[in-house]
Image (cartoon, rainbow, N blue to C red):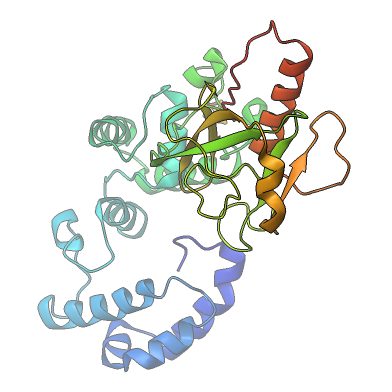
Length: 321
Ligand code: SF4
């Protein structure tokens, strides 16, 4: 119950659970629905199903006796190497190492271990350290202490190093990198999509903007049209822009968008726009109306405006945001 859940939340559940299922036989014989009913509100229901199944295996395969070796414990559903170590150490008073999330954090900081613990080599290094620190005497006390240290002082954010009994030898503290360890899971690399947007200028220097459809990226906002947009009220000479600007990079939560802005100078576009209902000519120096612009488009337009005022400057628009 205490995996992923705080003690104060667990206490009433534990008391009710133990009253209903006072021993392993009572738990094994109960219908799983009844076990789940007593778990309702605790979340992570796989824990309840695993506990129930483990009780049945203990009754069937271990004659109702709780296994007392690392290997046997690890055959039970829901019990991995660290949980088996914690049971051996705390419940059975045997020497065994643990490496739960709290212990990983303490060891990664104390030894300044770099790298994400999901990486096999880093995990191996952490297990080796966990084994090395595991004492012969009072193993259960040590196990409880290092878990509590991680839960109370060596917290994920803002560890209380001043109060920590390990602060004299802690490598992360000495190096000033406690906030960088443990190394977080690397972010998944996002796919890159590309699009070419048209910066269409009329003879007055205004730029053609179109309102995006209500759904999809930048829904309902005003943006530069895509080169191949069939809704454009004028035909752009394909592959013949007057200028191609530097790629503008913009990140969404699920992908990176690389925008290539292409400049087209139209000679007599006014005749072409009578039919356009979702577009307007935009004066970037003196916008006549307040419109919602997509953030990277707004930045690009500002850079174009600066460039039109200071044409000798860098004409490329870039954005790493
Ligand atoms: S000194 Fe700070 S970072 Fe190091 S183990 Fe203690 S609480 Fe964690």
